[in-house]
Length: 350
Image (cartoon, rainbow, N blue to C red; front, top):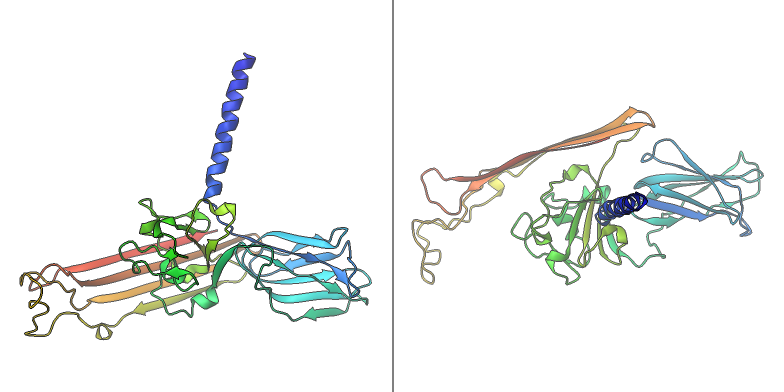
């Protein structure tokens, strides 16, 4: 009986460990870390100082106390812009604003407290650290402000990854085998993720991803090429990680309509009487080898986020409708057969 229980327990533990390990391979680094050392103006560590973190990306306020060596750390911090406040009796309050943290990033902020009344405040105006000197990871980040200004075809995966160093256009956006190459690696060595979930095409990473991400719902895109952490799993090309927006204590959103007017697009059909290659290649005159003038191409987009319960429950939703059509490149007819593609995409998270 005891032997049977022991064997059953071993099988259960083994199965549990297997279940726990598999998701970890597909899990991206979604949150960052802020750490540092609190010192006085002479460089001596200050234990027992209160360090507070506030920002629109977190609910309420986070507070920690510096250790015996003056060290503090905030773990699992979502991407966003934050303010850090450090205070201690007999010292002036220290404040630094506009600290930008990206997904999976570690930044170091070292408060320096000056002797004085706690009612006095010292505000530090400084840019956030842009380089993490404690990691060898080679990655690129595109925040929402930059994404909104980039001239792309609104493909959160392919278009945006090609704007980063070391990436090469292997195919074409939404085309055959659209996965890019990273630092001369093969296109089938990439991995695509959305909010930490592996979204790589099941046929293989050369085919990119089957997941459509609402472009206006993208918070950040991170392209990790070299020296990635174990959380990204096994790959030797690039991990293209898309993080979508979340709610906050303030209602926010947008609505947009994108269209390419027909007059802005030209047909690649030959002019009247043009041979279009008959002199050097045999073409069946009954087969149309050009696509003709596009019929229509437009997109309707809307996003909305905000609080359900302030500092407790937030929501964010996004809607995207795409519709495009152009004459078929294979058949000639009085009424051309249209290659029409359309779809509605809805993202929602609480």
